[in-house]
Image (cartoon, rainbow, N blue to C red; front, top):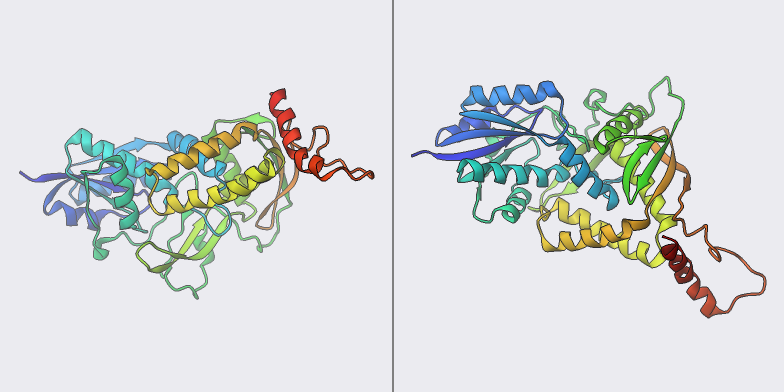
Length: 367
């Protein structure tokens, strides 16, 4: 009897060669986890997988789940900012989750992931956290999907003809979700106010949206000003260096706003520790350790810090930059007695040291 395997196919890339490869010795079930790709690309990859030999091709609409759990988690951890887009790392945990669930439901013995940026180590580690007995099949280099683009609501992986050469300038046509900040005519700056409740973005300019809709609205606005372009050389887990081109307009703007709001709602010591926690959180995501006990422990810490991260942040979007021009919060530690009050009498050192604790305690009791 032929073994059954489930192969995740990323919308925007051609899975035909890899599906044909696996179909020689396996019964292949293709799985497209829709995280916000273009609908025509989702339909196209499903059809190509079937033509290439998949016995069936399933589509799971996971856009809302992805936005409300994974994207919100990344924003609260201030992950995905300049120099660290988390593309495609952030999508891997939810793809691995649906891969392993589908494999169990359909009696498959192994899984694989077809993407233009394969990371065997991260996928194997992530999948092991969901099902330690399920094998992850490597995708040979000769059948790795080439070209195409991979979109989701967090960001877009840019595929160039030769993305590995760090000297080659990116073709202007390679960017799809961000306009060139240096292009003419230069658009007038836009201002947008992002509202957070307990670290979750809930509104733009006072209009409430589900997280998925908010991401799409802000993505279009920030992308118009060239915000969120990343052209990096990254270190992969297997020791290689690779060029990574990505676009994250909404994510870049949201993280800038969220980080600033934390500055006025969290105590100094909490901010200091959270900076390290945020970096560790991003390291775990990039390393495929989403299912680790440490990530869950970090999430518990981050969740506790978000109790008071509520308020509005005004952003000026222009020239590739999302600049904070104002912030306000009923939870602000600036708005309570003794917070930042200068005196000529020179308060005792003990009182100065106790001031942040007094201010935070008054705020906590008021809530």
